[in-house]
Length: 118
Image (cartoon, rainbow, N blue to C red; front, side, top):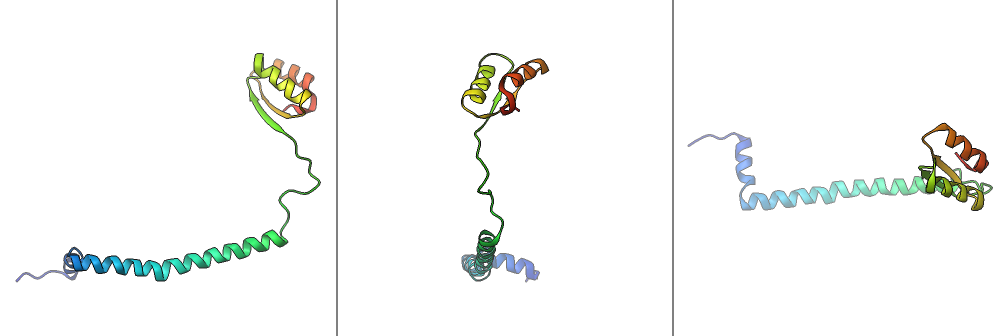
C-alpha cells in the first residue's frame, strides 16, 4: 500500500465521475446561495441610492442653459476645411473647433468667424 497525502486523495477523487459531478453541483450551489444574493443586494442598493440622487440631487443640466451645436473640423488652414468652418459658423450658427497648423490662418479665420470659432 502506498500512503497518499489528503491533497492527493482529494485530487484523485475530484477527477472521478462522481467527484466531478458533486464538485460541479457544489460550486453552483455556492454560486446560487452566496454570490447571487450578494449581487442582488448591491443591485438594490445602487437602485435605491441612484433613485435618491435622481429625486433630490442636483439636476444634470439646468433648464436655462441654451444648447448650441458644436462641430470639430481639422485642416482649417485652406480649402474645404476652411470653407466648411466659415459656412458652419457664420451661416448655420455652429460653434466650430477648428484645427489649424499655422497662426496666420488661425487669425484670419478668427477674424472672419468671430466668437463662434475656437
